[in-house]
Length: 270
Ligand SMILES: Nc1ncnc2c1ncn2[C@@H]1O[C@H](COP(=O)(O)OP(=O)(O)O)[C@@H](O)[C@H]1O
Ligand SMILES: [Mg+2]
Image (cartoon, rainbow, N blue to C red; front, side, top):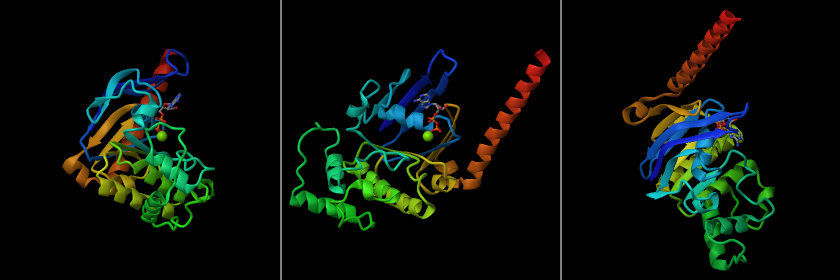
């Protein structure tokens, strides 16, 4: 379903600001699989999702979705295959447009824009049914602008929009990180239900070890633009939040060690 083969991405190459954000990352997801991506800040999680979504082109390697090589496809073309939800509830929806208009736009994703949006009675009835399934009481507020909703309500709607056309791939980038714990739980439950119901192939980034363990069927831990751990099958089934935290600790300890060795070497050569 998703086949990533040795992709690389360097930002600001050959300058003092050079960042090797992805180095030879390979990953294959079977249809219907649900991958959780964890890793320290700046380890390349968002860059991985952005590379797949086409926010930029990778420097090397290839990406295929549903058997089609999309490595050189522009972002808008990939949008026909991919649904996305970002961390920022203000991203991914048009705030001045109504809930209904946003949903109609989502239902036309990947098609030509600029056509007048007709929201007739049949369409509205389907919208209302789907919005009711969110259990957020938004079905009677379809004419309200998205901008008037809370962060949690927006994320729920963005999730509904991203999954509307049963995309080949769903990308979730810390989509509950900006929400209070109770709302985050609600959006996570919804995420779980939608993915299960539609058997969506999913790549989800989270900083919550609890979410990482409760959701999905595989956990990848990134570090410095590479995949450091890839937990699958029985190893994945056994893992607990504290095991994941320990792996973060290991990375930190190794970095401190590297740092002190570097400092010692520096001293030795001064
Ligand atoms: N558009 C960009 N321009 C320059 N540097 C970037 C850009 N996006 C990400 N980076 C850098 O690439 C590295 C990985 O970033 P990111 O993928 O956002 O990390 P994560 O999501 O794991 O926290 C970081 O050092 C970040 O500063
Ligand atoms: Mg990120």
